[in-house]
Amino acid sequence: MSDEQVKQQYPGSEIDVQWDSRLCIHISECGNAKGELFIMGRDPWCSPDISSKEEVREIVGRCPTGALSYVDKEGKAEQPAAENSVVVSCNGPLFISGDLDLEGAPQDMPGVQFRVALCRCGESANKPFCDNSHRKAGFSDYGSVGETGPGLKEKGGKLNIKPLPDGPLLVNGNLTILSGSGRIAWQGTDAALCRCGASKNKPFCDGSHKAAGFKS
Image (cartoon, rainbow, N blue to C red):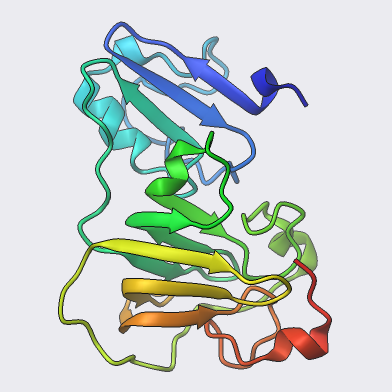
């Protein structure tokens, strides 16, 4: 697949939008947004000049996978969320947002500095990113979280995410984990999150990846 097919550019007079097919899992936060920034079936699908810069930034920031990003021509860069968080989605990926440092992420994926969807079913062909393989695999986990964590003294700051070879995601930094129902469930600074789909203590790793023969 060519670079043009992977990444599509939508230039505007004041702000440009980029869409990266490697990250998109079609949550449709953009397509369902009110207004005319994104209109399915229109060519081009995204028209930055139809909306204000503020609206472009806000709607692009809704994208939970980092597939959408923008370049403000006045130099106003996207800012991370004030608090680092992980949403353990029902039967789906880990939606992580904040000031993110994902080890091994390609430099040409600017959106994953702020928002990313990481596989937790173990079946993605695009690990560590989710590619919707959980649907075909029949992955089932409603996103409940049984632990509460040690708590936080402060919020925000850099969140380092390290996918271990054939193992879990090691997360270091101030972090809040929300259950699939939206409940603030766990807070702390260090966690090992399951990405093989086999843990009996989801979303946390319990070492099941070894017996499951998980390969990253």
